[in-house]
Length: 69
Picture 1 (cartoon, rainbow, N blue to C red):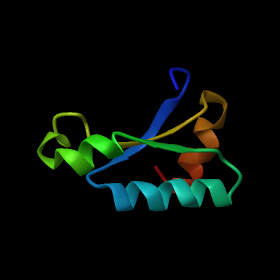
Picture 2: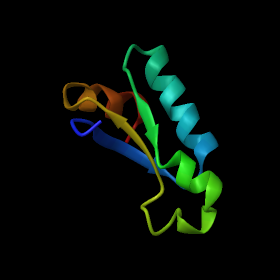
Picture 3: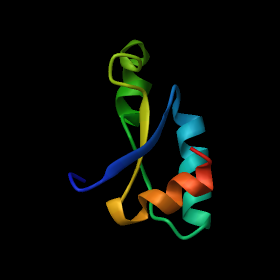
């Protein structure tokens, strides 16, 4: 997971999962990180930077295009 880069962040897990699903439908493997912290301790979401959607560095440009970010 260390070689992944953040495409975007969301304030909650459902939005991040929708973005991950969209990326995967377009053929970009994506991962949602910080989801467990958000579920167990939602008050830490803001301090951890939100829920991160991450991809391989080689997929970053395509992922940003797909998500419009």
